[in-house]
Figure: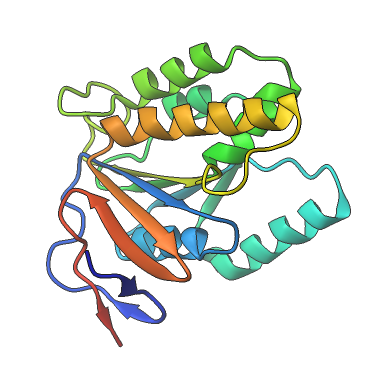
Length: 206
């Protein structure tokens, strides 16, 4: 596989034809959010941004501000720190629209902090989105596109405490479930896009 630098992209050829679910994976500061936003911007509006971050401290407040500033006015933003499946049921992408969820990993952290059933929440999310070839939910019935962003947290050292290990394991299982059902999966490393599943997205450097 060949990495694709997405800085200043011009999209060529077919990108999304509807009924698409894309999972964008990557490490911290890998460029995954920007890549996912560029994918969404390659489609006509409407574009809905579903934010899962909760502003618990000054650092997270600054991260949220940075993301909002980068996105600009082209998006409608909703917040879903816990009830992600419910938000997707109520606010699907619409005919030919695009919905971007950023990110699944923060959503998972919020679920763990709230003491939620992670396996049940994961199943509800997959079922709600109707992912996969026999989809019947959000993405399949209206021709829209759903893009999920998630962190790949399992490539480093084994954490030295039980909570961190549980988070790593839950994140890995969540990513597997979403990747197994998505149409396309892209891994971002150092600002380069590696297609893991599905056809590569047409992309040229402008």
